[in-house]
Image (cartoon, rainbow, N blue to C red; front, top):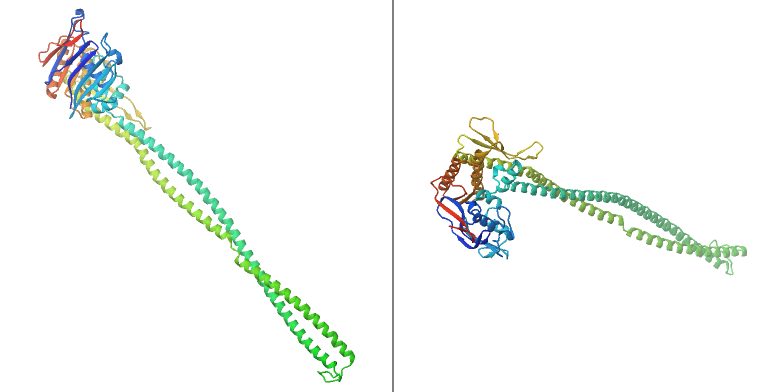
Length: 523
């Protein structure tokens, strides 16, 4: 529901002072005319007939329908102005007040921003001028060129919501692609690291093999050296033992040779002096030999101990290459694990990218579908209005935008009129005079219905400001009859503002705006 209650004007344009305006509440068609007592030669013009609803528009949207703002709305010689409007929007009772000098905007007594106010209204300024107030100097929907007409239509119907969603999808796809590219670069770096680690491992494995081979060779050499030294020491020990035994024999012989009998203790033969001297020489030789062998034995013992110590050191020497290989393997395993995680993330991002890419065109297709669907409904509304305006057997169609082969959108919103007896359409722009005005009004009526339906509102008020230009007297009656029927069938108040006299006896009421030397006021 969207309905207008009382309006209070203070120093707003020609309405000087404070004016409380209570419009008729009952449904029907009301004619608003004027009486210019200040300048009689202007008759009903210039009295402020449009100002009442222009003030409503200014209060709601901060500008008049002709773009006046700020000090331009203040009455002559006055310093401030304000408008208070009471609205019913569905279940919400709204009291909106806008002041100029000082500037303020309140909703139910509390300051509010323009954006928040329009959320409560459920109608933007453009939608309001096509669904509630069709201003005198406003451009009719059908009068717009094809591209602006489509722009207005899609904005009012909020069909560009889907284009915004397509842009969101496009932005999301770009973000996903950037993330995927970043991960791909990370994966390439990691793959390079894996390859470097593999090369390091290969080098370390070679070094480890060489270490183990050299260690084994060195240990074998030491073991062989120890075995050889032990064998030599055994031989030396045997030589010492032999020499010691021989020395003892010599000593026994010497003992026998030195006795009085000079009898050889071995053979029991007498010993000559020369033999004794030889034994003496042998004794010295054997002693020197034992000393030499003993020194050799001591040296061999030291060498064996050194070799055994070297062998133990070699056996305990750690192959650090194996430890380095293990660490490198851990690094390679971690890098491969991270690569797997990145690959999974890239796969997931690719799926998301495919979905986002699909919806870039998908949202546009949804929008095109809604545009066509909405236009078909608009055609029905406009054709019904055309019949009520006397355009019997006329048919109106709209040509809409379509997706081309390249995936783009061909823009265009063209009004095609099929007059009686014509199989080929005629563009709206080809008509003039009364037919144009009837077609124009039919378009406005149909669009008003569609806007309110789209906004989820049931309009209880419509204002048509001098819609009957270029119409004959009969045309004026047709317009009045159409609006009267519309008011009664939809249970709404419709205000028809016109300076001309309309010979129509079914007006629910007539209101007159008088302008005198003080200013304008509503009778």
